Image 1 (tube, rainbow, N blue to C red):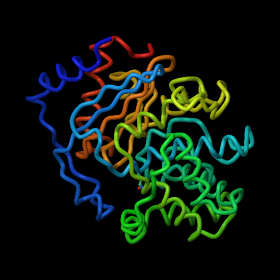
Image 2 (cartoon, helix red, strand yellow):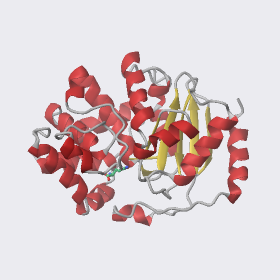
Image 3 (spheres, rainbow, N blue to C red):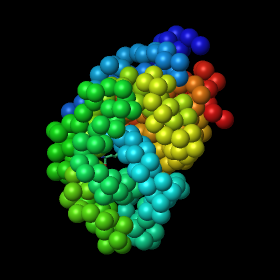
Image 4 (cartoon, rainbow, N blue to C red):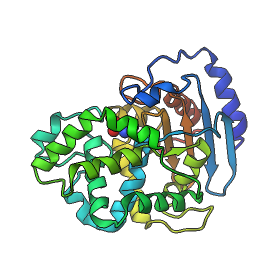
Length: 304
Ligand code: GLN
């Protein structure tokens, strides 16, 4: 498949696409990114690479990191993990507090902020040095030892992270946060601050396109069963209250972040990462979603 040509065709076809939406300036540093940036990178499980635009520029992966923290926590906790966080779509915004009280502090899934904060708490409980060990894990997944946190972004988010603090406090009141709130939030803000290029992001997620094994590095990261389950949760919850729309239009398991990135995988075929910072009302990349829709249409590669 000539993915390179398909990328160029879609970009010229989308020239008239109106890229509306705002940057995630509730995290002040994210408001400083150029809104017109656009990059895409696809890597096949045979390690063929295709890219276009600003695909080699770093950006804040934000909630995309939640898939990586979930992967590590699932390895550590096995099935016990699901006692503390569910696998159901929430149908609510990523930072919503509403369901959490009703659900007695058990978040619907690991990709809404509440769920990712519980996963962060689990990692804080198990790891001696959570920041260091999580970064080592991400570097192993990506096959790239230069990936790191952005202290500036983490600090920026911490300075305005009132809703996340509220979610964490509410869950603590229900007994679903075991560690000190400040320690858990600090780790959560840091894991959201990881920066990657589209190229690095696509490669980092290759293990989920290849049944748990990174086909570039040869590392078996997780079992086939866990890989399928993580993809299932991405399919149903990866884009929050727009997960239905994403399944409907793109048809791949995917995960978004408020830095404007979206990563999606086609098991047995490829991993693709796209970046465009303007967000729609649900906090997902506006142009990124449209590009992926056009891409799976042109390549007839929705999983359905
Ligand atoms: N760090 C962001 C937050 O907690 C992540 C949100 C996102 O990317 N959807 O609000």
